Image (cartoon, rainbow, N blue to C red; front, side, top):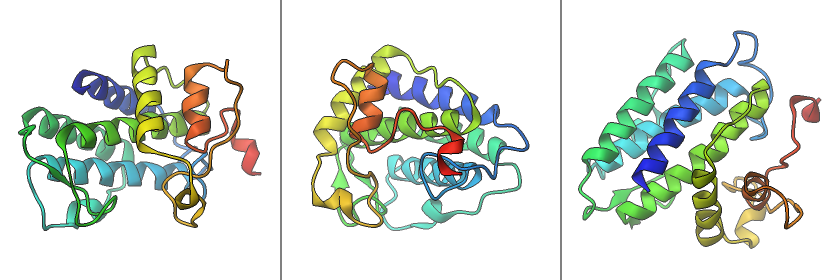
Length: 197
């Protein structure tokens, strides 16, 4: 799982690095966030997960830390930070994830799978918003499809205003695995920037 996670984060960094100067304020599939707001969220989540991997269980500041004027550079730095922290983490130590389930300490493998899922989907968000091909490897997509069905059940929680994932979007059962991941997690695989215009 850690290799899948590493490749996902590195690919997401390539996608963020390729965002054009005029695209940062454009819409994303993760409404109502703009590209800049989405990447800010991704930076903070990376910093927060890195802190959790280091064993921090009281300080929430990494999850809300300021982002500088160059989000692409900050994102690349946050990817380096979280990959190093995950690689050095003690698998026997749980992760405190206050903005996911406050007060609950998650097992290492589950935390890695959460982060993997989130960054494949947010990588696709960035790609769709900026006209790029997401380009995630098939084995990554297959693993995330399994995680999505296991960890993100459908139900009333997904209908709440601030739910992490919206209710599923119907996609054909024979659709590519990436489309099935996106549909299950409430994304329209056919979304493009004009969808929000």
